[in-house]
Image (cartoon, rainbow over all chains, first blue to last red; front, side):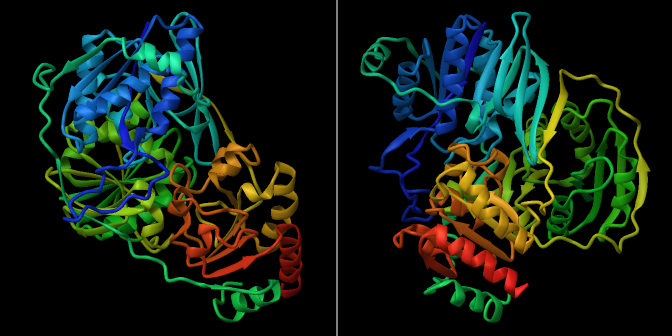
Length: 250
Length: 311
């Protein structure tokens, strides 16, 4: 079984994002970029399947400009065997990413795709579900546990509002990883060195015969209305008085 | 043309999120049809008839309400609508993107403002930024952030009911079981008061010992930061923030939470925010209306007691 893990290069989660000067995007120049944290969890899940003898090969893929290749190197340092870079604009929409990924999945006869449940930049939470739909495959989103049997039936525990749900599905399928699926390993120096020699192949949307026309037009990126700053109270007594008499919420 | 709102329900009654979705749909202009699809969901469909603004409830029995089957159903209904709207909960987020992909249109996630039928504002980067986007598609598929839209009332409407043919598709995935946490407390997303704890609580025992009496006293829901979830103090569905729930109660009390932007994303629309933390530099104080710097072990029991006296 071949497992495909899509990864995305995003602004590091410790950095406070700001709108670009022209207000048409987010300022990224000169800032630290990292692999989307949920994609690290997805990658870890795939590598563990390989280590358990359930998968033969783990393939990483990213859609984005040339700089995205550094995220593929990270993916290979974390355990992916090889990778694909599909050249595309940085702000490519989830639907178009899903179309490109579907083409790669078909080309590589993928049996299982494990994605992060959302990217922490645009927070769309769409790509995995869209990919599953385009491939006509079942899905299990927000996974916190995966059990795969040798016949290709999976039981996936899903994080849902109010608790957990277990779904059963058959390969081929798409899983999206939630926070508690695993704790991703760190890339070790020897693995980072080895990753430099692993195959990284370039693809274009044209080669994949996928159109990536936009469906959305960004009109502006801006700071949301700020809360006005509050006050420090000196003790519990003052807090209770203010909540009762001023805020009138208790 | 009309707008299709997807009801979220437990087959017996509608969940609160549905009334937020209907309110959002009301801002788009047009007749509102409510889809109630599930297993033995007739009671929920009848509840839908009394929700204001809804003109028609479409009721469908699904043998297997899996993500794939729900998406196929909505995909088949969508061409007669201008918009399809669902709440950005784990239900809507699960399968609405499938509908968008099957129809070859974008989905606009987590809408917080509807500016016109084709222009929407949505948060990105954990709500640190907002983006205004225009849809270039003729059919717009939206999930809405429930806290950004005041819910319509529970009753007052008189919608007609249309039963669509039952769908017997087996589909590829199937629910095996569900483990829902039952609690006497109000639901986190609809509670008037939320008491939320973070890393500062120190342990699962401490979380319970300090926060449960306070929550009981206030009839509040309990929430948590991602750090508290990661440390195993509470289950994941307590999580408030970018990758958890978004809440906007009348009163949000953040206890021992430092206030990472990922957490603020889930609670900064609360009407009144109280932050209690021993670290005066914690970023949570920047969004708090009332901040109290102090030792949680003393402050929280004192606060619980003061609330008991206040009644």
